[in-house]
Image 1: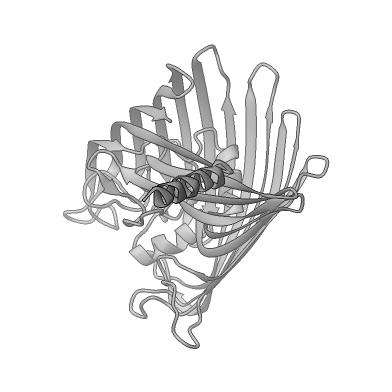
Image 2: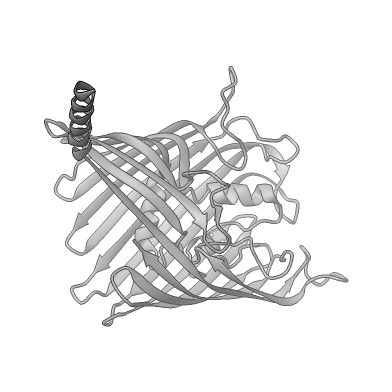
Length: 398
């Protein structure tokens, strides 16, 4: 009996020593607030002006994840010796207004990866943020949160769910079944490359069937950081696989996205930023695409962002102007202002207001960190609508 106790004690000490070499951090964010939207031209019909068509309306709700999605994460490293480390991260989203999981009920839907890091750089695999999205979070003063989010105007909106899905792919934020490499910094220059041959999205789910043609993603980002300057150039490409449903999916061939941007933060905290994205979706045949049923084989988008923020003590006011223009789908533009009040390093109160205007061919809508721009007052919304949005909330990080 005594030998067994000694053996157990030795085993416990050994496991404790092994665990001590692994650094694990539990972190998270909880966000909750009030969201309001007003549709100035009308809701409830695709074409304004028809009998029983759109009338102005509004919607408001208490919601979670408005400024940033609520999340719980685990990240860590293990020292493997000779400058080599194992790294991992598991991050799941949740909606603290009702306690459900976010990201379509995925356990770790925000990010989930494992890899190695050393003098050569970092290599990881799993569900990852795209290099494009990581860069855009730095360019947008609202970090794609609240009603000031850049993606409100940059995306297509949706006259049908499928068109909305194509618009989402032109603003790529995450990719499944991916591998990525992040180089060391060389005099401020750094390169990130990512690849997936089985990416999952709204137009096609991942497949393990023999001879299945899956979505393939290629991405490469080159960035430069020096002092207050951050600049980058990104290329993101999707080669479409077998459609999810022949009755819903457009005959998508490929999507390309080129993004360039820069931000500069002065010594007094003033930050100026700007970004431009060119996106193009190609289709395999002439298929009616937009509300005018004009057949197209290519959809091209040009998107612009200008941002500014300036801290004053505990206050951080911010503003942005977003413009998006696309052939066959018209244009949209958004002006947004907001302010954060930092109660501590981890807790803040935030507020934001935005005004978004579409021409008669565009379906973009005001969204925030909890609701995409497809969410509008009432049960739907029309092309050419203008919208206003307002948020007020509180956020705590741990």
